[in-house]
Image 1 (tube, one colour):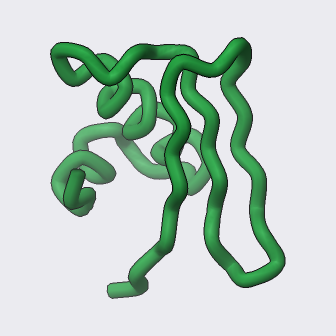
Image 2 (image 1 turned 45 degrees about the vertical axis):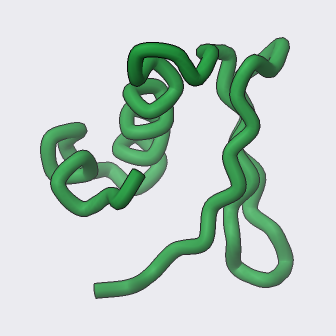
Length: 63
């Protein structure tokens, strides 16, 4: 299993995903970190980026 380094910034004006030169991802989320909303948006975005089901991504993430 590959480990991915991700920097997440909630409460952004727009949702973005940027691949950094060091192989990590910087992700800006519109959702606030309240009641798991930012985590759900993050899972959805990562699942779309890697072409896997959201349920599969949720099982592998350590949030």
